[in-house]
Amino acid sequence: MQPDDIVKSFRKIQSYLYELTGIHLENNSKQTMMKNRLDSLTRNPIFSHAQSVQDILDIASQNSQARQLFINAFTTNKTDFFREKVHFQDMLDRAMPQLFNSHFRIKIYCAASSTGEEPYSIAATALYAKEIYRSSSDIEIIATDIDTKVLQLAKDGVFTFNPKLHLPNWVNMEKYFDTICENPNGTLQIQAKPELKSMLKFQNLNLFDEKYPFGKNDFDMIFCRNILIYFKIADQEKILHKLFAHLKMGGTFYLGHAEDLLGLKDKVERLGNKTYIKIKE
Image 1 (cartoon, one colour):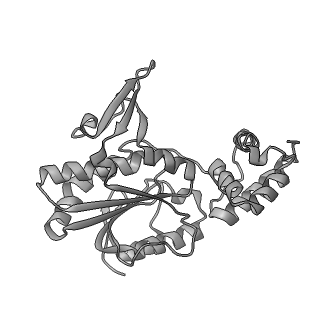
Image 2: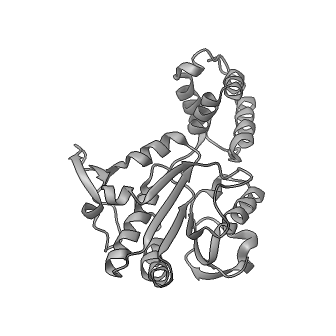
C-alpha cells in the first residue's frame, strides 16, 4: 500500500471510524499505531489489493466483513482480571446481598467485554457471593463489545494469567479456572470452568447504535467502565442516557475511574469510587 499524506490519511480514518462506531480517535494519536493497524488490515486477503487508505475505506464501505475487520483493527482493548477491584468488593459486600434478599433472578450487564477478563471477573464475584450468602438466585450476565475478534476470545474463555497479579484477597482463581499449562515466562494458560461460562452471554453491540436490544429497567447492575473515554462528550451523554434506561430503579451503575456521569448526576445516589445507585428515571 502506497503511503498517503499522513494528516490526510489520519483524518479519513478518523472520520470513517466515527461514522461507523462513534469512536473518536484523538488528533494526537500515534502515527506508528495507525500504520501498524493499517498494515494488519492489508495482510488480510480482503484488503490485499488496497494501494491507499482510500482503497481500504472503499472496500470497507462495500463489504460488511471488511467493515467489521476495519472496526476490529481500530478498537482498543485494554483489560485485566478484577481491574479497579473496589467495584468487585462493593458488588460482593453490598450489591449482591441486597439483590439476593429481593430477587430470584438477577441480570448484570457489562458494556465493554473486550477479551473477557472483566465479565469473567463479574461472574466469579457473583458465584462467590452466591456461595457465602447461600443464595439460590439465578444470575445472568450479558457482555457486549463492538470488536468481534475479542468477543470470540471471550467466548472461548482461555486466558494468559499472571499469578503475580494483585487480586482481591478473597479471589481463588483455581476455583473458577482450570490451568492448561505454565508458560516459560511464569504466566499460566487458564480456561474458565463450565459453571462460570454458563452464566455469561456474549453479544456484538455498538454502543453508538440508536437503540440497544434490552428491555426497559432490564438490569440490576451495569458495568460501563473505561469505554466512554473513547467517545466525544456529547456522545458519552447519549450513551449514558440509553444505558440508564435499562437499569432498574435502585440498580447499581459502575463507571471507569476517568469517566463522569455527566447529566445523570441528579438521578443517582453516589456511593464513591465511581459507584452510583439509580434513584430517579
